[in-house]
Image (cartoon, rainbow, N blue to C red; front, side):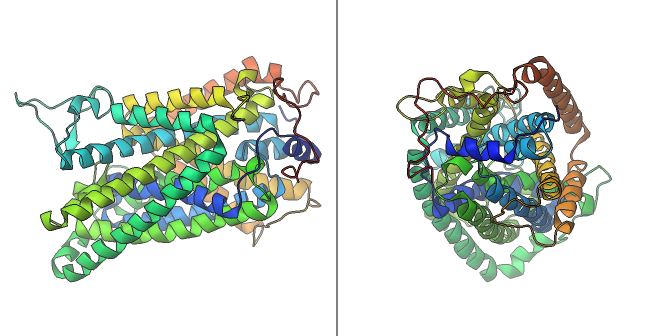
Length: 510
């Protein structure tokens, strides 16, 4: 349980990896932006504002951004020291031990798999809204989670008989997950090219939203400023509903939207120069996206009353509020949101498949998850499985439940990563590090405290689910992982028999 991979072993796995090194620093920055920009702005901002923080969701983004920066600095140091696929899973394996690595793998399934489902649900909301602008209506029963009343403009949608419309299945969300899983099977190089195009379009649309809606807000500030009164709504007495408690609760909701920089670290074995490029990708994407989050949250809560934002598509609600003369702009923004959310789902699913790939090579998951496609050179079996899990969760569960589960897994994983930095500095101070966390050990300790403090702002039912999920993961480790661990057997990680060894003297290996 406490067995650890040696640093030399991790570096040897990097050199013999079958994955192609195709990603440069700009690919990694765009990879991070592709994941970060989307979920927070396009999906969860509305829920956090409407249910918990009101206009003060701006402060929630600041709180989440500070906590994220603490974890991001730790990720940057670890990714520059241990540049391997698997991200926080491998970091835990090398520093704390195998059992901690297994728990981290379970947490990352919540962080990546369920986060992709959350964003897919938001993607569906924007698609439904945009198609409705063109007179194309998807039956309401197929646009939401199973057994939930359909909500629009803050009120339930009624059918012809006056009864609330109950949704059965979120068809658009299921379709996008399946389609992106197929793209990832084709190859990460092709996926990265598609992602770069998507991110360029998305950044242009986000900038246009900030400038045009911001200018509208400035022109009508005398009337719109009422939407910020009060800026921090009075607490209702319920846990996490407005007041400062609500601000912290909202911070835990929007926090998962920042996990893009963590997705960058999963690309360690596919980065051309990981020691230089990984910190650039992580910190660069985090800085750009934090600024954009703050600007968008200011504009959104001024142009629309926060009570109207408890929808999967809050940006669509905001641009529709500009009036019919801005209908053309609303369509552009909705299309941009759809494109942006597409890249988020893509990057999250990509990260999850690489974590499964690494765990399978270590023997902690069945070997089939490490099977590399003979033509596309991608872990195609686990990519298909991730696609099915993500699609099913997006189709049948509501966005708030999925989002809360994601936040808990993400925060716990980030806290363990901060601990891993301290552990590695103590046990291996001699290791060359391309990047070092400043003000060590103060910032890593603050990161641990902040992450676990935000966890306990989440609803009790979610914490209970998290406890049972963790217990199930522990049982599975003793039933399968402990018995099949390659490290426990004293063997090297599993390699796919269908491919030759990656040549150590190849240019990509250097």
